[in-house]
Length: 268
Image (cartoon, rainbow, N blue to C red; front, side, top):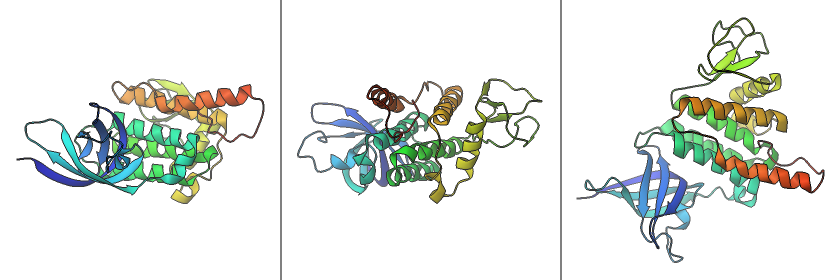
């Protein structure tokens, strides 16, 4: 007999399963990341279709049969649609990157309430922040998730000797922290002094200050390169944050049209 599970869920992605149904990737605080079949959700008349859109928090009822590896979505109701971010392609793209990372990095079926809270906090922060600074919430969310997954990063002291005299010339992607001039470590990656300073600020910032830190495009590009290299090292099969490639196109289009206000997140 199928087991019914009622849970909160952040919808991370979806893909077609049949002409009228889809497979939904979601993360839940008590069931972890999972894929579930939503029968009929692709129909225009589906009542639960909007609640299964990516970047949505919903309350779902799942039916799990012992004869199937995949649950079925019995019902879904929207709790939070993060409506403010949907008015901006930049913020939708940054939020999609957070969901993409969670979908690829979180183990399937392992409860992780802290990871759920961190992704939800990042999405809410992106929704409440101006385009130019929305990516701050992505970086902070990735830092928090790295800790939830067991490979936390730190940015203010040498991972070899503990020296805190800044700046450190490189970051060790193997050890998850800076390396001073006197030490060496495996897989060291040079970084900008401004990048280290920005990451120290973001890691220590209160929720109200994350989106208020103006980070330059040059530093955001360096942060993106660093975190992608870090996660390639620690997550099997991880390549890069594909969602952020949309911002590369936006930046290129803006450059082609001539100089203008610097309003887009510079992570291309």
